[in-house]
Length: 78
Image 1 (tube, one colour):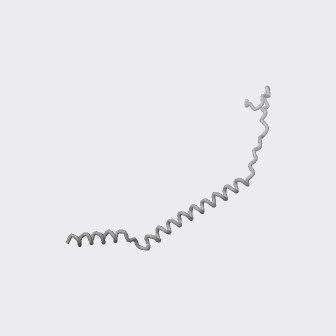
Image 2: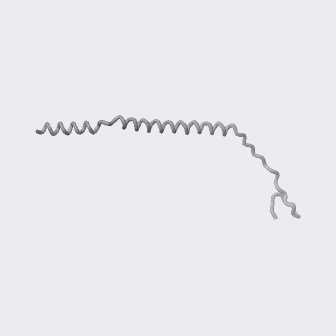
Image 3: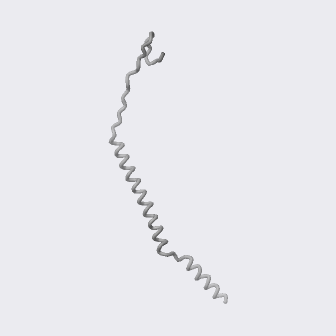
């Protein structure tokens, strides 16, 4: 009698570990989606970085504003 209960318990444990094919299909699709999304973002980041390198950024300084005051001090407001 004792062996029968142990056999049933072992069988129950074995059934608990068996996963259907849909389990593996689901998690495989999730893994593919995550890796695909990371590749998509990575390639977009690379394109953005290359476009930024090609952009010419120029800074021009305007001459200092001279106020028409009687003392004629450079860059001061009245």
